[in-house]
Length: 100
Image (cartoon, rainbow, N blue to C red; front, side, top):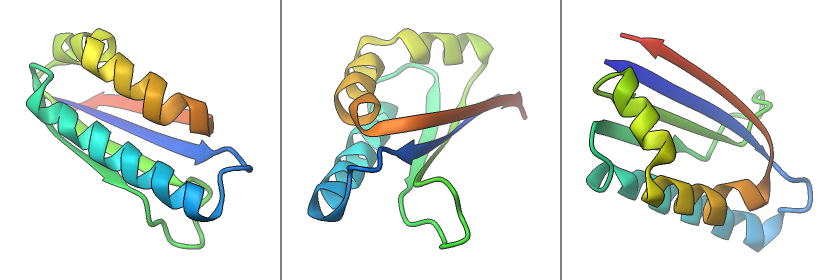
């Protein structure tokens, strides 16, 4: 199995009610990918970090294999969610993938 973990920092101009909407839509749409992407075993989104954090959102997912990760990254549903609900609102992305 493979863990795929991402940390995002939102753009500075994403604030207030708009921020709440962005976070809600990121969470709902990313977590819905579990039902759509083969090999994606689970995925959870954390949008309420402690004040000591320097990231706004964390994605924590488990996939069947490294090949499943490659398929996830190019899957049309994942690309659509990333292009619609994530990339337009984030300025920093850090990723770590590792075998478990």
